[in-house]
Length: 386
Image 1 (cartoon, rainbow, N blue to C red):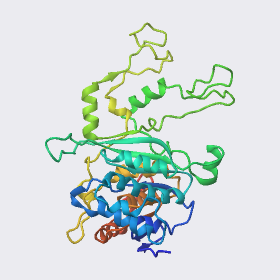
Image 2: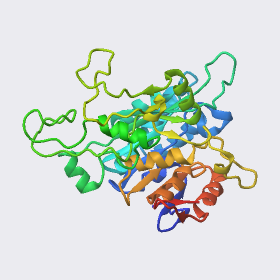
Image 3: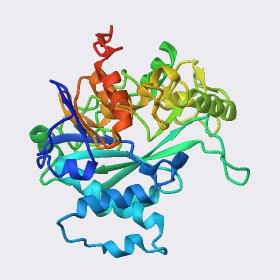
């Protein structure tokens, strides 16, 4: 078994190719995979993001093994880089699938030009594709004058199948469901909270026919209490400040209408309930989405530098904290096969999760160590921050 490059009570860091390292990790041993792999775009000419890096990884993984894809095809001039990227994604995703507990989720970032290969590879490796998350940001710029300005990155959401019911799997493995309570969208203010909770129907209802109005729940066998006071339900679109401001500029200010209850004529507030809980609240549409108040790309304070080396593709820390909370149970373990500068590892430490990281490139190991060795302290909300 590969010896860790570094290990303590919370972090295990391996130095090596992720496929080779993952093959030494036990089955059904982690709760979630949250990862930011190469996109197959040859970004800044980096070898780890191009065909040569993928061939190197696949050929090393095939050493002593039968190659189902045909090693010769990988070196032929007509072998498309996209096919090679997809093949490589399927191999590492298959290892992630094996290591995950039943019901465990994978969240994998992709590039807008190549994420279809990633999504197919994740599905072909055994995962159910459950959703996609779009991270919208405002700082992208076109590399040449003939392409569109990049403003979002997709995240593939997959889940390892499990047998039996979701409830039983959650109890047995801690996996299978999203942690909604840990990732709700905070209300803009007290009036926003009152307006939202006053109008929604996810409250207590009786057990007689017609008294349970929770959408999609027709059991009518027990009282339901869907407490939305902690924030709105998380969405599959994540915004930064610039995108939130743009959305509000386009939608304008929406305002609740007092005294126009359900049953009123069209255009007079149809859909509201005459309960006396309506509020004269106003706000832009961005309040319905998770909005991270940081620079759209990771700021310099989140880009460790050691001996003049920086990683070129660093995700914002708050974004990664939200993602690991979404799919990891309390006290769970996260696997990040592409540790990079260590953002996911730091996010896990702050959120109280164990984490296993793998990084192949020698130059980035000191960046990871700088992140995970810096002191953390408890925040007033019970989590940790640097």
